[in-house]
Image (cartoon, rainbow over all chains, first blue to last red; front, side, top):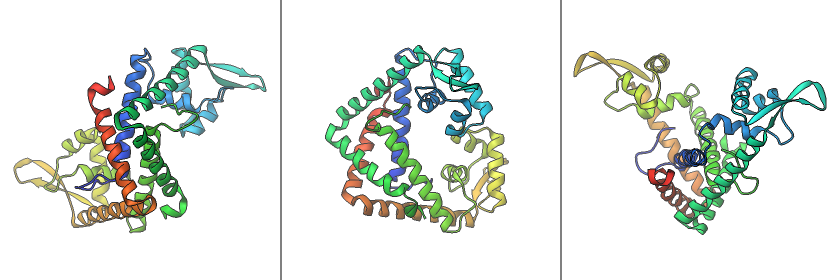
Length: 150
Length: 150
């Protein structure tokens, strides 16, 4: 998206804030000892259900090929965050599940995100952050609606 | 980045708004007759200086290999938005420059972005949009600073 010369479009400000907060998140994750977790890993963490999820379902959810998702699962399995188990409901199927190490990392990432929100509220003020969030949420609900994008 | 169960982190709200506004932008660009322009093209438009820019410079700016950038330039040259010219200051070098068609498209994209900002201000209110932008800009300045991300 081209950027105006004067005031940055709100969508570009949003992109910059997303990138900055993402970098902040991974810096904090690294500081917490999780140096081996990257964006592609946390995407998988998000897509993984607590009861376990099939590789094919994870692939469809994240728009990846089953092969690419298989490699990502291999990667996280090798570092001990997840493992493959037999599906108790389908003897032919395998489920990807969190290990205890993975569950601890997931919990830690939630705490980091909560800490970031607290820090951000301290930077701009709790009320202003809440107000900005409310405005953006209202705006994106309207912009995401099909009738607004035609 | 993992998402909290309750209130979405501001960085994720920002990401959703960016994606929605990006989709809105390309929908409007298509409606204006520019069906052949995609994200990768508008990135190049952004990186291209009015006096012309070398392929190697464009590649470095966008973090692409010179070969991948060369293909992107070929693509936009074939559709008539840009062209390669000899660099008047260096006989061995070639510059990528906008054609008239490309300049018109660039101007049209600025108008579309300005129109989006007006529409977004109408949805949430001009003052609220300005206030949210100010809060986000202040926040991202702090978060982007190295001492905040360590």
